[in-house]
Image 1: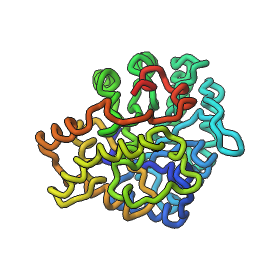
Image 2: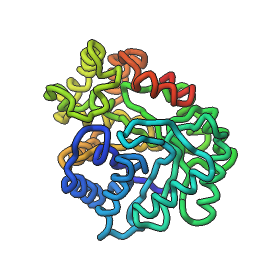
Image 3: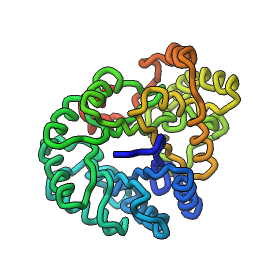
Image 4: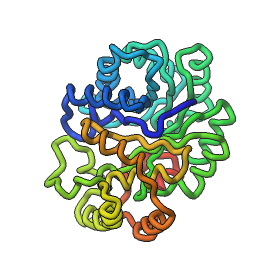
Amino acid sequence: MTLPALGLGCMGMSDAYGPADRDESIATVHAALDAGIFLLDTGDFYGQGHNELLIREALWSRRREDVFIAVKFGALRDPEGRFLGFDSRPAAVKNALAYTLKRLGTDYVDLYQPARLDPAVPIEDTVGAVAEMIQAGYVRHLGLSEVSAQTLERAAAVHPVRWLQIEYSVLDRGIEASILPAARRLGTVISAYGVLGRGLLSTDWAARKALAVGDYRAHLPRFSGDNLERNLALTGVLHDIAAEYEVTATQIAIAWVLAQGPDIVPLIGARRRHQLTEAIGALDIRLSSGDLARIRNAIPADAPAGTRYAPEQMRMLDSETGAV
């Protein structure tokens, strides 16, 4: 499985972070492909199918074989967008894939992954259903998202797991204890999302007065009250190093993730072309061992205030990842 150094996370073009501009979103997808960022990450529940339809529109003039499309499935939502749980039964896997293929206008997806562990369904059953779709030619590779090392190993015993998508940034390093070592033992790529700490590590956070209407971060403990100020204070070291390199704090945060190993592919949630251009600039930055140590010392793994999800969402995570 060949992947670029960065991937484009497309969720924000349809969901979660407030209104997005359709034309600018499509232009951003085109700019990513033109820059060699051919990995597009989506989910069938992003905007209740809107994101897959947007990607179809963006790709209509492109060759299908030039794009790597990764799709998450299994999340259940009501008409108001509220999450109801997850369904990863084998029949649900195949049904969701059928709808995804129609919305994307393609006869296969490059990687298919359950969005979260369904506690009511053994992971072996879910993986087995995806493996059947791989054998049938509708899927090329199996992925997982937000699972523990134990779950990853159980899944890999049924079928090779090509990547594990999970949150990883200088503010979220919980995978380093057991999940990352397990992935490396199994030859599983880490597809790292949240590399900017959902915006806390970005250059322009200080300029924001308030979160936009519909921005789900307003409900996250890490962005609430005193927690937000405490977490922003941790990021000063990134701004200091950025000034020394004459780059941005966003680029230093991405460069930090890139420096953790070639088997980690950061997903950039850019909704606009200027955000994508800034992110791509991180590929030219080589942080020294001294820089990396300085960042780790300034932002200890247990320093961030507040959990990364609201309590009801934390309960939906696989036990080990819920602790990070």
